[in-house]
Length: 176
Length: 294
Image (cartoon, rainbow over all chains, first blue to last red):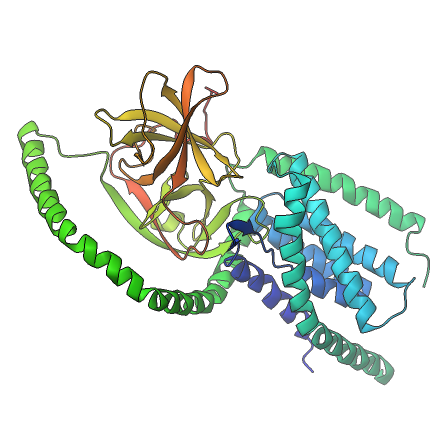
């Protein structure tokens, strides 16, 4: 397989996020529902679980920085949170059984944590005045539902890509 | 594998947090000009982003077309009833326009606050975590886009340019919570034009707030609000929205009107950046630089 497959997937997911972001906010029954695509962080958590932490944190730092500079204009927010979430994923995955189901659930839990941290941060610097209840009903739920659909569809592909990449890497080390 | 949080890692983490706080405070303070590395990153990511946004716009275009096909019958009925009215209005507009031009010639006035040079732009990304209402466009300083220019769609004003790099520009939507975001506006429809400022957004009602209207002036529900051009940067006559409710503001001194925006902020594809022909001055539209009054 190609050596740059993982960074390539990261790059594609990074560019896909704002494209899907264009569909949001969705107006359902007079209520605006914000759906935030979080493909990259889910991929990075899978990378932590099935590949290794160091790579995941490095990619997290790099793409987090791009995200900060291009979209948010607050440097250091995503470039800190992406690696931090990866670290938390690695710590949590040691304590639970390893299979695709637990990995998916853990990813979704961390995603909710990630959203919540961001909400707290933007509340702190008063970019938003959204009350907690509104945040949960109009942002957190729609986002979690949309992202879990994405993860259920593509999670096993992520896993198989990483497992093959990992075995290839191990084989190469064995050669030398 | 060693324990996850050894001393060395703990120190690294702490250093990371300190660096993070420093960087965040730096970038929050200095938000109106872009440093060179940031510009390079923005341009590079913007180039990549426009590659990805093109097929997306194609797909949304198809959805839009299907959507409009489904509504064809109803729309047709509605339009038929309006058609006769329209012919009359058009004749009147033509007449008024030529009269206006003649009068301008007589007075010797050539430039108008209404005139602007439109720069067509495509939305290449919308801030994916939608905490701040931002768009990124594929036109930048090379095409003559400058900060604080008005950005609109065919149906009305949507925001203004906050940052530019050579090939991209960032637009802050009018539905922002930023308190420094002002647009000088006027209400038309009554006997006299009424001036006020669009200041703030009611996130629950999804409506803009038109503030600082003289308490003696009567405003009606349904009156149209347009940009006045007196703020210094925006052209005159860009439709902002219609008034839905008039109340007294929190101090009881001036009136406050809720304005329903004319433009739809979701699913934005193509926008127009208005480069005003009249010289631009520092004024109320210019919330980012040197605005001391509060």
